[in-house]
Each structure stands twice: as structure tokens, then as C-alpha cells.
Image (tube, rainbow over all chains, first blue to last red; front, side, top):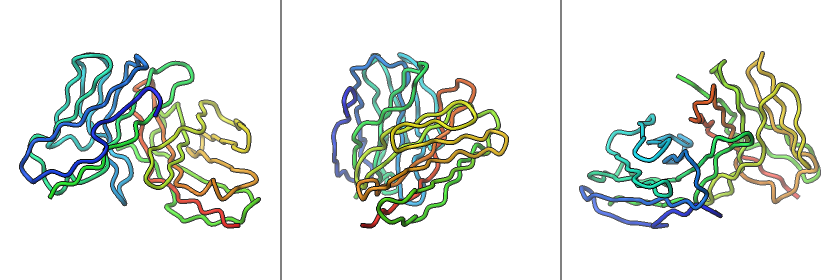
Length: 113
Length: 111
């Protein structure tokens, strides 16, 4: 999507390996989010950030960590990937303005084997 | 725990009909409401936002909000096959900027 990119788009990794997903925005938005989407569960918030070095946990944060050292980048790390972390991961951004909403990246499809 | 409930569907409507999608939410502090469309294999796309009780129209889409009854709905007039997608409802309260999403309703518009 315009202004927000996720990388990689697809990844296959082995159980027990660390994995880092990247979200990059060019909109200078303050808020950034990581979601996972699984059939039957919808979108679930993993972590979010409300500014550089300001992050907090979402509802499914176990096994994940994040970092935001620059406004434009929000990294999600799976410390030791498990098969239960096979999912589609979406990054989203928001500026919290009057007509705000949440803009999503194209997603990363992660498979842990 | 904040919850947003949607009927998973599928909701099947003929082309040209009105599709009505509904959503209820548990958090009375919710102040912002959003409808997203998600095509299969794609990311969610914002189509409507509403903040005040009543109706908000944008082209063929109308969002309706009733805070007293804690529901929000989306009407799609003159439904087209290209409207076939999953529609996600989301709420957010009190300037937290942390949305809660429903699981979505699958809409099928058949010719």
C-alpha cells in the first residue's frame, strides 16, 4: 500500500530460528501496529508503538518482541519461531488525526516448518 | 475484555440489492468506528469511518451508528460482484488509538 511497505512478503523458516519482519512507512505517522491474522481469529494485536522507542504489548505478544528506533521503521522479531506462529502478519499505521483510520501494509505470509 | 461481534456469514445477496452488515461492540467507551473491506489474500482497506450517532453516506456505502444500542452497521446499495469480500468492523475508544477488530462478515454478491 502507498506509504507503508512490509518485508519480506513471504518467508519460510524452521522451528527455533529467530525471524525479523520489517514495516517501513513514509507517512511520518506516530502510531504503528503489528497484527497477525488467522482463520477463525480475525486480526489480533501483537505489539504497537506510539512513538520512537515507545512500544507496548497487545493481546498476543508472547514470543514476539518489537523495536522502533526511527519513526519510519517498526520491526517485529519472533525470538524462536514455532509452528503456532505460522500466520499472515500485517503492519498498520495511524496518525491519530481528525479523520484518522488505520492503513495496512500488504502483509507478510510466514510459514514455520 | 473489549469485544466486537460480527456474523461470520457468508451473506449472499443478488447483484443490485442492498447488503446490510452489522456489528455490535461491548465497550461503551468506544468513540470511533470503522469499516474495512478485505479481499481474499489482500490487506484490509478502510472504506468508512463514523464517530457520531446517525448515518454517514459515501457513494454506495452508508454507515449507521447507534451508541445507545452499541451497534454499527454498513449498508451497500446497488451491490456489485466486486463488493464480494470480507468486511471488518473496528472500534476504538477514548483516544487510545488501539482498535479492536471483529472477525469479519463474508459478503458474496452473485450476478
